[in-house]
Length: 347
Image 1: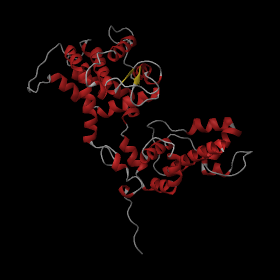
Image 2: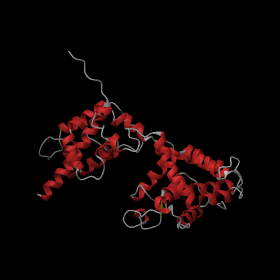
Image 3: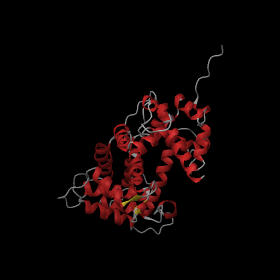
Image 4: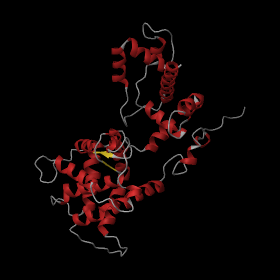
């Protein structure tokens, strides 16, 4: 008997992702990460970050390597790049609080500052009002440079303000804010003389120690464990037709949609197989997770609320790899049930 063909994710239904991903691979590469960072860094410099760094460094413009860029500016860039995964995840996580992935609102910025416990009530420079002022001043910095179109203020979704009607910062402006906060917390208080060292202290100690795994999870680690494995791929392949029908309403590449669905599966609360054999009292039939949860919510609201509260996952929380494919199947069932309910209502 011919031995089974070893599983190869590059020959699975994920394969088309290599044609549109920036890395031309199923995973991000260091080269792609550096390209993204370089674009944001260049735009931040164009928006006035050089002036911010030099003022914080006592207006010294030493350039020992003679490349035309002040050494301290280069060192600040290296400090931020050393924590690039943290900075990227930090922006994405807190921008999403105001319904965006491209702009950070003042409310989301306040949540970040609070979560990291960066403020000191009695401080001359580091009260919450100081950090809000830094946010506003950064937003209002002269944005007339030609580089603005490539990375300055963004037109936030829904007409500005990142979803809450106020000002919002782009990624390059977020880098400026981080540098200004580092100067305020450590340079102005004479704790750390160099801006680059202050940035390293802010990101590597203050933020990292407060938020930890919450914002440093590597997207590729999730893909490797839960998306690009044979059991999950079997479930996806078995439901490919249904997924394509659901996907028709989603503005994402199909492979991106599948990953988003799997990530939702890591967070959702599901009934056990045994519970689904004992459908809620008053329900019409035995069926899948989507119908079970819908009927449970309709017929037994308190039981449904308790199930969700006790079993829902947490963002970046540990999820067992063994049996994860059942979570994927249940998530697909929930999506299918929702789509069928919408179709039925419109019939």
